[in-house]
Image (cartoon, rainbow, N blue to C red):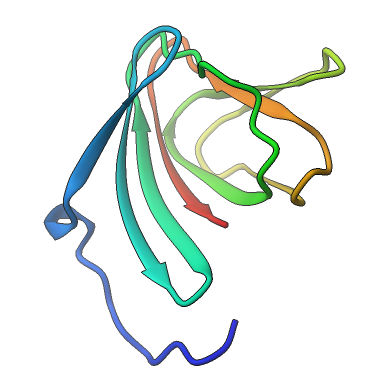
Length: 107
């Protein structure tokens, strides 16, 4: 990461966008710092992504439970304080949650 001056973010003031999943919705609050995208994402209970994602992320679960399924069938359950990292085009993945989740994502 280069050319990003020190700053703070009050995520409650960042405009929210809503993205429909196959089930439920994802609410994103997004900031861009050069080529780096940083998001606070909230999934509603019962959310299931409508696509396999191939973008790399570093993701931290702040609240709730996140189930991440890899295209090869493996499933990982993350709870608050857990994170995952995956590179661009490394392993396709999709998210779901039975009870809702609040995430912090850098990509």
